[in-house]
Image (spheres, rainbow, N blue to C red):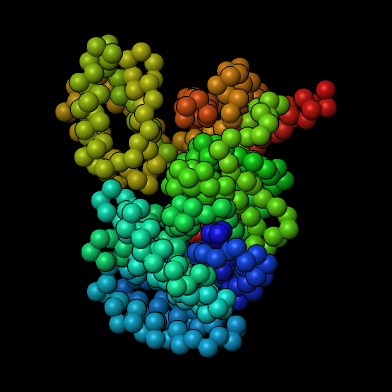
Length: 438
Ligand SMILES: Nc1ncnc2c1ncn2[C@@H]1O[C@H](COP(=O)(O)OP(=O)(O)O)[C@@H](O)[C@H]1O
Ligand SMILES: N[C@@H](CC(=O)OP(=O)(O)O)C(=O)O
């Protein structure tokens, strides 16, 4: 049995639905279909999830609700489906203003999946009836029991991605891009032979195609490499979607709905060959980080200072990365959007309550990571990359190696982000071709 997930771009309009149907019909093993909410297309500039988020914030939600309804009804009409989706829309409309955030934002997936189930002739299963979350995360035992129960009577199902239910039955929304997680969880629960993740690119590319236009496809990746790339920000596969497939060693393919024949990337436990000539497997990054550096004379003898500093970050519920910075310093990295509203309160708390000598803040920092299995065996790779960046006059603010030595991360100014990615890409490709033609 295969679990297949179609991202928002694959279900953006009726034309995309048709491509999905062809893919499903070409392999009878594609029995569990997960869909995201209708996403962007050439005629639809806003993802349905963002339409719902905007609707939630709007003083007058009516026009935005109308836009969501129009979009769903248009897909239904264009496909000539005999489904009274107006009924579902009416139920959602009645709950505007009183329903939970998670319920409202998940409705894009719910409505899109209802249409897809009808179109494919598959059975619609509401994700809140089969993916159950407790305070530890997904409850595998309960969820599996429920899913197998459904599959006992319906062997071909469509499930909306991006949400499940809490133990009390209320909707539990996953992080953005969460339909990847739904698909991965379902693949784990049924021990799928393959998890296919269909999107609008033919696999994972060595670098973001919006930055490197002719970026090479990565044919195969390990779960560890994918985890590092996803963590660093390649939008194509949600970071939390790696674990469920990795746990059960379920091969995972990233494929293109618009070009199914083009092949894609296969994610597996280990590479068949060692790829010694490839110094970098993939490059990923993100902009707009804030770096807070604290200094304390002889910090290594005053670990209580670090403890107090961490307690401050914990109080503000921040997801941070930390790296030693010289003998007496420590730097903490955080996405600017996450810290922005509390930044001055945090700085003042750090200064007043932690016993530090100084606190320095650097904003507009971008992180660029080069991921490679070769890094741990060939530390000189880090020096090579630094050399490339130096010769391009890119000011590298800091460097650290982490992720079990799988990735090396460069901190650069936001303005140098694209240039850094292009430079690492170009040089590592040139190195690769020199090696294979030698
Ligand atoms: N290294 C990369 N490889 C492939 N795609 C990438 C990479 N980095 C960023 N992307 C972007 O991720 C997009 C696909 O992710 P997403 O928009 O979430 O798709 P979907 O709508 O299928 O869920 C691609 O269109 C591409 O622009
Ligand atoms: N629709 C949700 C969940 C999701 O997975 O979307 P996509 O597959 O289009 O990235 C989002 O926009 O975050």
